[in-house]
Amino acid sequence: MFIGQDSINARNAGATVCRHPVNLGQGAALQTGIDYALSRGADHIVTFDADGQHRPIDAADMVKILDSGRFDVVLASRFLGHTVGMQLSKRLLLKLATLYTRVTTGLEISDTHNGLRVFSANAARKIRIRQNRMAHASEILELISKLGLRYTEAPCTIIYTDYSMAKGQRMVGAVSILKDLLVRRMYR
Image (cartoon, rainbow, N blue to C red; front, side, top):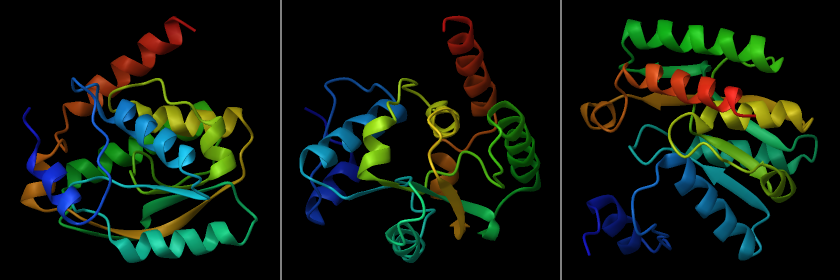
């Protein structure tokens, strides 16, 4: 069985690595990880992208916000914080995606498709990700709105590197996400 270098690095660092027999996509991987953490009694669930663009200190700060008890979900925002190495085209696309999300969900957010999030165990139990691929990020925001979960945003720093850009940061992905969202809406 082939195990990717990221999985090997995670295991070597002491992480438990959950795997699907076939690649089902990031959304499916997140749901499996959330289910695993909940089955082990987790009080908080932190999600982040595996491409090194998020800083652990930002996640720790977000957990502190969740610990206040005022929110069910804390969402990271690169637009409340900082970005390093973000292309202008990416910035414009994310601003358009954020506007779309605000209109379709009613959520007052400044960033969309940011993989850094913190959920309370209660919120994580309610959110069921069904979009297996990248549209899961929009689906999570739709569910936060639909379920009436209390949310806030926290500033974060996103660091774009050649490595992170090669791990799925292509602009064509936005078209795929939009297609997945539209297909899902047709079959509700």
